Length: 282
Image (tube, rainbow, N blue to C red; front, side):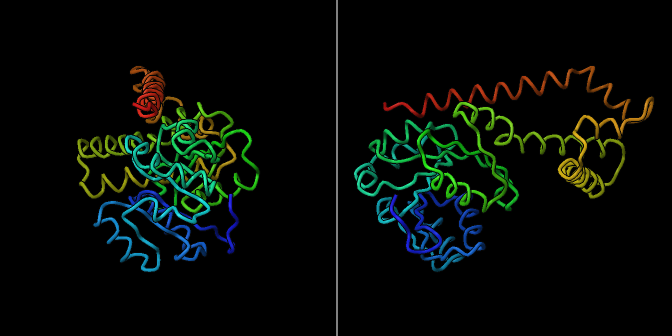
């Protein structure tokens, strides 16, 4: 990987959607010079939004124009579009040998490296939607042989939108996708259901929504800061014969634990299927 002349590397984002926007905002807030960031997106409206939000970021309709001379290529396109986006960059990748950081869900590192000519180091990241407000949790996987400096740089770039954990096996990213990648939707559903139940009990709509959202936020904050684990925290709220126990008994009777386990397994399985589908060369 070529060395940047600044404390921040020269970064090319392939794709200028919401996650790319979040990353740019995080990098700039942490001191990255906007002109060191180039973004390629074929959609003029995306480029117009970025031009208004970050006037000094360099914008391109062409991927190669953005990637040229960059130290890091961040692949931020939809998985089904990734192969078509990066294969034309193979010659440039062989010449520059950038660090490639992919946030495209499901596409395996070996497929990305093959499409780019085999001469690049690849790190995969699985962020989740709260990254849009800097509150994400991202899991990263680095191919064997990637040096510590490259791993550190990849982690630093993704930390701009939230916390980072590393997994030691690429296959674990399918579980990550099922837990934290898809996970916000599970919590949004629970908030939605709590709000609906509150309405059914006669609470005003504004009160129902506030109670559902703030209860979820408070419970998460307590779990994050407490020395006690989630089962202990649950037990602390549950008095024998009380209201919480009555509600949890209904969950147990409906096999909520089994439902969640099956749902996560289905999401992980679908992640593997999509990797097989979108990783093919034809």
